[in-house]
Image (cartoon, rainbow, N blue to C red; front, side):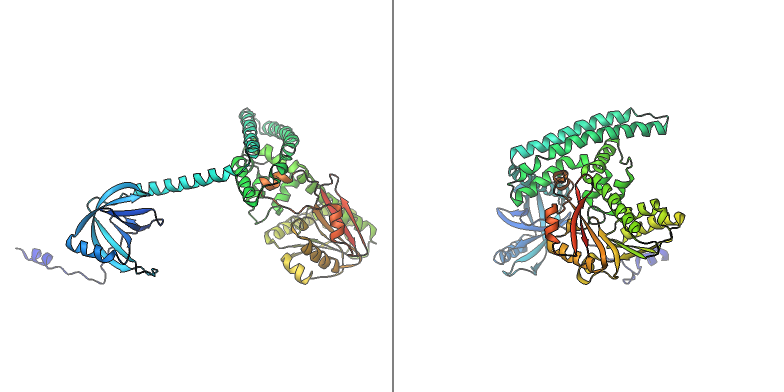
Amino acid sequence: MSSNAMKQEFFHIDESTRKKVVRQDRTPLEPGMCYLDFHGRQFEVLNISHFGCAVLVSATDFPNMQDHFAKNPNMEADVLFKNILTQNLSLRWARAEKHSKSVTGEMIVGFEVIGEPFKMDRIKALEVSAEVIKEQTLYAQNLAQLPAEFKTFVYEMKDWLEKLKGHIDKLEADAPVDNWKEAQDYKLTIAETVSEYLGHVIPATYAKVPVFIANFTPEQMKWATEFARNQIGHLVYGAPFANRAYFKPRGYAGDYEMMNHLYRDELVGKTLFDQCMHKYFIDEPAGAAVKNRGQYLFEKITQLFTATPPSTPLKVMSVASGPAMEQQLFLQNSSQFYGRPAEFTCLDQDEESLKHAQRQLQSVDRFVKSGFNFKFNNMAIRNVIAAGLPEQNYDLIYSAGLFDYFTEPVAQMAAQKMLAAVKPGGRVIIGNFSKNNPCVPFMELILDWHLIYRSEEDLLRIFKGMGSKIWVEKEPLGVNLFVVIEK
């Protein structure tokens, strides 16, 4: 034998650098699903890998099992998953330990698989199939709770929307391809025509919803909502406005970008059908009322400036300002007031919303050079309610869409803090959606957009006794109300 061969035979291993064998990861199983059957005696399987498993053994069974394996190193067992025989395995005792959470002395016994490994894919397939069956059974049970007329209504609405989508998809396929402007005009014309049609059909159709759900239990209402959204949502959420309302990327519906969708009035959406739906949402009464709201507040600011001597300083604040569209409108359309000593403050707890308003206002003011002072305050609304506004002596404080989410006690406290921050003779204007909003059923059932709707009488009652005068105004559609409180 050569010396080189001798060197190879007596090689040395450095244990400090030797890699340890990685133990195969075990897959935990849902309790009560999988068992090993040793000749009619079943033991629950806790987890498995291709080459091993762990089972739960009672304190009384453990000695017998241990004794049996001492006499028979290898034993066969059937694997049962939900009482379905999956395979037969040859097993060898590996180790045992006490179950750390057991109060009755149960043991965990680990087995090594000899020969054919565990059929992990089959176990997984059975496991996921069992879950599907469980969910489907629950779905059927919950669906059975809903009245047939409600389910028929939802199915018919789905069928109607799908039929409409098919027609619009065909129209989109026929759009001009050689001229971008012609294609846009073609799509815009269709979107405007179809959205107007939707405006006649959808509110009238969904007016039936309150009748259907009037006597629903909370559990029925839960499943009715889920059912309606599962059936119809995919036909609606492609519209950017509806998508943002339902999925709430800022954590709430009605964020600044949704307001921008309303004011921009653009043709947006991946498909022509989505664009038609989007156009409907921004033109429906609730959407139109929000656009009217911006115009209403713009006019109120204009009236304030007109009624105030040019040399008198003015302070205006918007609480929960969003995109501050009314201030943008004032800045763009009120050159006769440029150079006046005026301060505009936007307060919002959504920092991104506040930054957006700042960018928009400063962008406009860069060109018009109004001379107005713009301030931006990132402050939580709960802090306003608790401690009041950080400054006083405002001529006008308004909140367009915040009080739609406030209960009466909270609305009263917030209004009192706002009123405390205006000077004598100053005004607080609070917007609130009216109970006459025809879009409520669709907004709540499909878009998950819930507001607190109030009548003129409600607003006068809630804010009774505040200020020296109080009255209610409305935008042209009567969907958005405004309570005006004069200090």
